Length: 236
Image 1: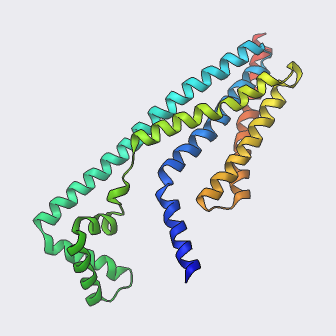
Image 2 (image 1 turned 135 degrees about the vertical axis):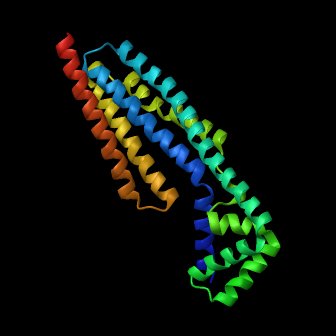
Image 3 (image 1 turned 45 degrees about the vertical axis):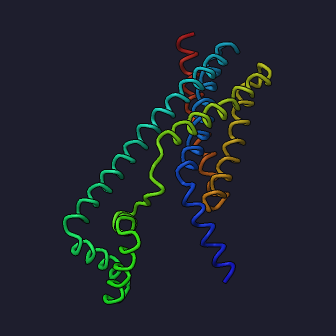
């Protein structure tokens, strides 16, 4: 029985950290892909090291702010929707408690519970926490785990700013002839590691997660490098 308990605890733990994990992984992956792609595109146009550095720093600042605002707005909308659903459920419970009790019981019936037992379960759960039972089983919302806009915003901004430093550090440590390969190599290795880490934390296959992120990043860098080279030749 112990392995089963540990497995259920691990699944619960992963579910409880889904919000901040999503924000952190999204921020870090996007930081590397967007900043590295921007810098490689500028470098491919035969720009100076200073210009590439300015592009990278600008991408870091703009990306961090954009991620923070985007996550805050998105998660705030999600939280507003959750709160609205909860308030509606409160009104329905106050106005028609018996109908809501039967509706809750039918949810358990649809899941395979015998009708009489389903009603007993609904009654016992409602006696303990009526709103919590309806919100959880009818709406799929955990009252104690609502979306957190500020948490998502600062985690996204911090992770973006931190990981955007990887291609910038690669530029500063590389010679003029190896700027693009150094930025690309450091970024792709970091993306593979982040993909594997995200897969591990989320319970997904490590190799598949790493490959998916790495191929996407490589494609983005290749496209921006081609555009930078094309613009550098045509403008120059």
